[in-house]
Amino acid sequence: MTTTPDVSAAGTFHLGGDLPVSRMGFGAMKLPSHDWDGPACDPGQSREVLRRAVELGIDHIDTAWFYFHRDVSANGLIRQALHPYRDDLVIATKVGPGRDPEGNWLLPADREGLRAAVHRNLRELGVDRLDLVYLRRMPSQSSIAEPFAALAELRAEGLIRHLGVSNVDAAQLAEAEALAPVVAVQNKFSVLEHTEAGDRLLADCEAKGIAFVPFYPLGGTGVPDHPALRRVAERHGATRAQVMVAWLLALSPVTLAIPGTSSPAHLVENVAAAGLHLDAADLAELGALAAEPVART
Image (cartoon, rainbow, N blue to C red; front, top):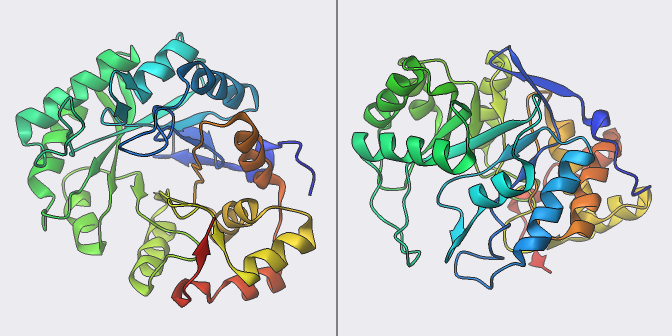
């Protein structure tokens, strides 16, 4: 397939019914470093990637204050590269987890910790209100009612426009919905890593008009190498990564893709997937891959 990016081909979704974003977005996690423990990325190149992403038409960037490596943070790179922001640029962030200056993970944030995290995002990004804030559930949390209520209070204060939840099941989504509107769910989900429960949650989001925003859309640990992925990619003259992104966009009108990278070339490759249209035969071939073991490259 052509590598000329066409973000508009992905279509548009309205978060909360009032905040339009392209269904092809960008994830900022890999801008400071290639992994949580390094190695570090070139900050200048990461800023170049952000500026190029916006030039290509991306208007939805997903970040978090805990995306950092040493003294370089994703939020800081976003502000350095793009502030003052375009009027149509939507920046989504996440709170709940925390890391100390050395990068060690902390316990889930309490009410005051969540308030501090929201204010930290506001300060680091240089904005008066956050477009979308996800509560990222940690594995130790079976209920998210209390922390989500804390974010609902901040929304009522005008510091947050819309709320989302991340790493949740159907019961936890229902807990949040009982407290305040939920406009987006961000869970781990890809063509090779999804479950029946995850599929049902996506269907629930589609029925309710809630955005479903998979994290690790390319697997998170290298692009999987699977014969079916290769066959579909070869038929379209595409890459395996492009097929994985295109599959997410084809899955439902509520799915938003946020593949991330610190490479300008990979950025163009990922964005070009917006123009890759998989047919019924492609989708059938890819449909049963989640249960099969794969190698990664």
